[in-house]
Length: 478
Image (cartoon, rainbow, N blue to C red; front, side, top):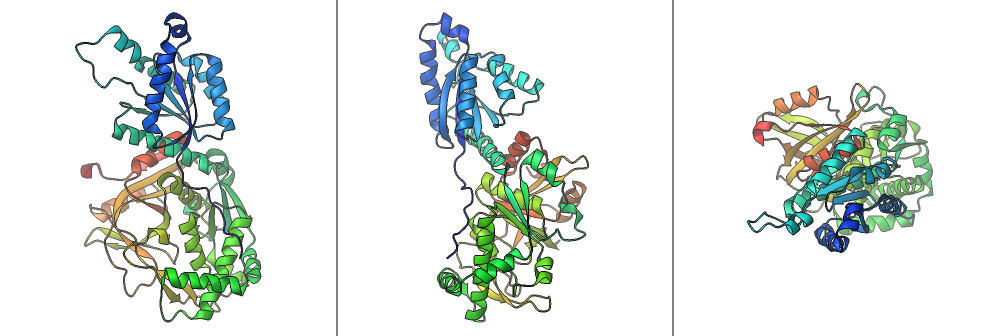
């Protein structure tokens, strides 16, 4: 059987930590650096639950910073975590940061939780980091060096969670650099809202487009072995609820297309994928469309968007790294009575986000185009709970911008007469008001959805990348 493609795992961010102090203190205060080294260990201990610390160093000389940044780059860290341990002069650090492409996050913390009446000069000595943080952030901004910043006590869980969002955003930012987005066929003609300057996308963001010949899917399909497809059918029968109308022969054809999709993604080393179904139909060579295998690939971690939209496909892959899981979607029918929206597409939806109290149902799906055989599709709705809708678009100046809105997935059984993956997004405000704001913000018709309330994580990602960010959640509802 063809080897399954491998996707970058959603793992903890890999960080290199730099504790920052001042060379003068090493000369003037015997034993001070040893005390700060022990304190740095205490600061890093709770962070280790949110990130993999690949290296750490207390730095009080320029050379220390240079060596630690080089070590971080060699270790392919996702971010540099700067922790001022005392006052630290900014120009010890900034020159080395000018020359690195690694995201920078600053943790402005201290050991003391409160200032008591018994406050001493030693309390000040071990808890004076704010001035150094301010020196550093001022000079970074003046040098146009972007960074994330979180302030709080080193043992405060909410502050640590916010810091963890910065680190996850750094990981997501790094995952987009060099991400290969396969496009099978040309973009759907006339759909202008996902048009993009691909060279600028690679330069400003990172994803690279890999055009794929439309007949490549047919070539992979022809090479797919029937016995391997039959093994996939057996797995499907154990994993899913299979409707009686799904015949064995038809299921084997869809399984062969799954093998073809997996080979295509693996050989092109894709982290995201998009296709123009019209070109696949017109090219011929395959009996039907590969939606069954495509949905399984989404569950495995492939970023995706329909119609040749490389931008949203890359965005989904990046959101998966940021949030752990994501799916492609569109807004279809509006329910003005309950202020909600039907979210669906032809078939493409991540079954790993399906309700966990029922099996995904495999159904027989006809397709409207003549000459296209029925295929095996999926019928399910999503696990209810909070969800974040997000889209990416260039603005009039070409600057990438994220548009987002937190909502809620309705607790519902699938519609019995609409046999494609679907779900309902509840907004908690007049739905027309949201749609007006979304349109005025230039939101495109392709979106990505991730479970949970993730707008702040997305805001942090946008800040690190230098992208625009529009949160459409109404202030009155906060």
